Image (cartoon, rainbow, N blue to C red; front, side):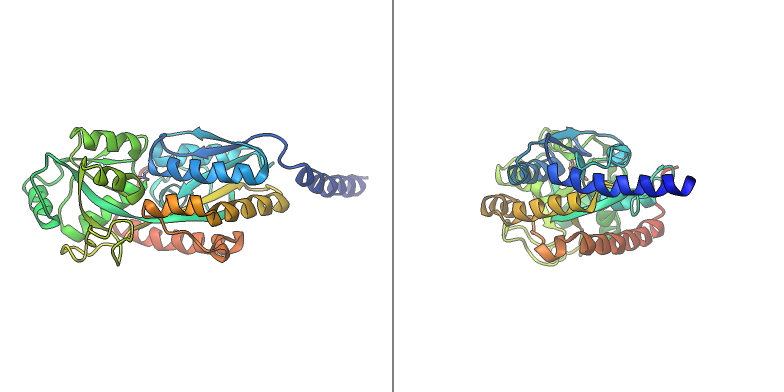
Length: 323
Ligand code: ASP
């Protein structure tokens, strides 16, 4: 009897899955964004979500769930129904570094979410407010060395991209600044412009528009080569302090989301990345667009795993953890 019930239950599940996938999507899809509106993750989410929505014939509704460097948002995605109506955008901080840094996460970043697609990545800019007297990266380092750990700097919390950028900066320069956590580097950027904080290392997508507007100063880019979007900004290595950090983004669904639905979402994400208007807007912000092959769920899962192991080593060596 028990066996018969199990067989019937599994038949019902296998019938239900294609039916669900066929009618999918028949209502708006929630896109969980782990940081505040107006910041770099939010900008990528809105651009990609809007285009994916067109592709799928349903709107993507942005849900900015902030706090604990994105780990609250990821928890919300893990607990959501695996029906394709909740997806989460994240990056190398929220879905990689946090797994090593936060010892009390009640989910596993590598197994509790299903990868949908890799999304663009961008280097970071070492920046300051215009009130900081330093004109070069060397001068900025000298300025910070006078008061290590005292000059206020912005991050989106321990484990965020801007925290990883700060750690790379500290390692490369032998100095440090005070890490002030925000709910995203959108609000932190407003405070950098207003000089409430003085330094930040953040994605080019957030810092470049302010540099172009003459509202903050950039000293170096955390990449091997200069960016086409900002050819005047030297690499950190050219400015005397080699450091490379690239913040890649990705899209995930709760574990158990039917593979047909993951496939539909993946195709929509690829279509968004191939759209010339979306590409142009992302590239103008210094973002590199992944190829369709890199965006395939299996390729993305393998990349995610490698990145997880790579950052675990770096963060454990730096002894960064939160109990
Ligand atoms: N760029 C931020 C970070 O430091 C987060 C954000 O606001 O998108 O991870």
